[in-house]
Image: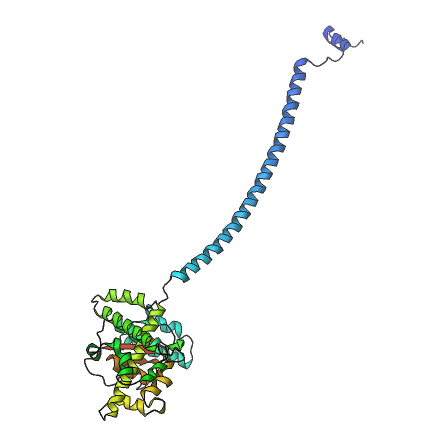
Length: 358
């Protein structure tokens, strides 16, 4: 049986063979190729740009981080510098809670730490002392603690100072009483002596008189406190005031010594002072004791008696290391006149003093 024949059109196409591509197809292919190449080029450019941008961003972040660290260190240094330059260096600090101070300063379970904590608790509960003002530790701190309270409380001049011009006392010792040895007076660590000692003493005493007059005339407690903060942040003025107090003590010792030579009755504390070989007269007292105050040592107990007598104040001292003994609370002088005002100090070792706040 013969095979079926293809339709005429099919046979014709078979005889003609494959057709050539049309012009439209070539154009589409060309556009596709160009687009593909353009996209490929654009992607490469974009990828390079992104990589460059990321690298730049990373570098910028690293630079910013290093710059931030550098600026932070410089800013910290400048802040510390400005604080050191302009911060007031108060020699009498602000009030802090008494028991918190005790717990911070006397940690541990040693016998001395336990004794101190109990002594502070005694001050808090029995004597109603709630706060303490720390005083700068140097060889002037007893004088600083006393004078700060005299000024902050607005106490008036002692009666004998109201009758005399204390600015003229240095010359009075020299010309009226012949105390030419006063030229050996030493201004604490300065150790200055010489013919100009009278001029320096006069300036110190004049400053004491001016400041004392100003503080005693201020009735507002808070204003006196603000002025004390200003005064007791000026080391130069402070030291002049302390040297003036030392001289006032020396003047009182000299006056009582002259009374003793005329067989007048003198306070018992001065008899004790003159009974010591190292302070048998005003000169030896100055050379062996007073000249060292502010330099190598502070006030001794007998000096505290003289200071209280000279300023006509009762200095009550809580000696914490003597807790549970009769010497825990002492007064300088021990038998003052009733009208004398009272100030209080506390000490942990009879060398450095702080100010209790009731």
